[in-house]
Image (cartoon, rainbow, N blue to C red; front, side):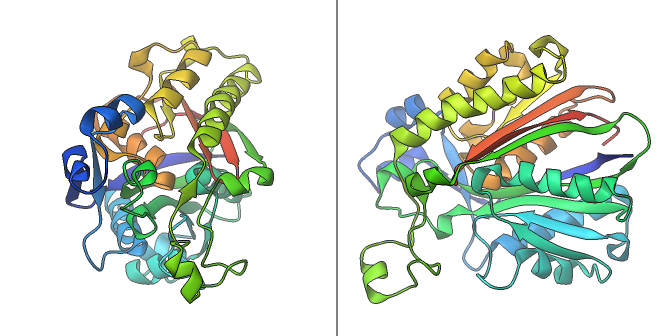
Length: 328
């Protein structure tokens, strides 16, 4: 038994922040941002809008597209670095919001690799036969942890999310393989220093702006270029495939140069790579499921097509997933 994707969905907040808006906020300009990241615009939540609100919208779309009732759902997994609360799982809030009274769920924290981690978790649970389905969501409200006086980070991130419904499959359609990695020695290079048990909130942490994303951009870039490309090529090699066998490659949307390096390593032509970072920036766990829903909406995937997903993120975390597409 395999697990297959039977529906996709995405949610982008209405508010849009352009590079020209950022020119008025920090010492930067449109050309600098575009040339170094490929980003032109990003979406931001409205006041009072949280990660669970985005996730609820995504989950309701999945139910509508598949004709399922909330009571039909067995499991809800949410990949996020920006939960509504530190203690209560965002998955629990979404479960309550949609009325999925028979479902249980939890959050997965793997930064930008979170959606692939959540997909692997949901896949194994569905493959076990114990659960008929799972809603898997990747969503982040990055604006809640971004310092909009720091030009090194505020130009990169946006808010948004997407998700899929996983269900049982008795044929060769579905998730075929995955590779996941973690290296905690990289935790210092990309994180939010305060707010957890290591540095609880205090007057000092607030004054020192320690509740925002901090990153060593050069170190993260070097790590990402190598490891996302390596793990993409690795999963093809271990399945005796080449880039020619793929219909589509959906990489984490962090930086255009990182995406291009991974595509080149796999020998992929530009028309086989889905890139939307120009519109949305880096939505962290949301980038891949947002792009996946766009691919479905624009008919870039047909039944039987091979799809490759790949990501990297803070932790460090990185991974890839190979999917034989179905009827979603």
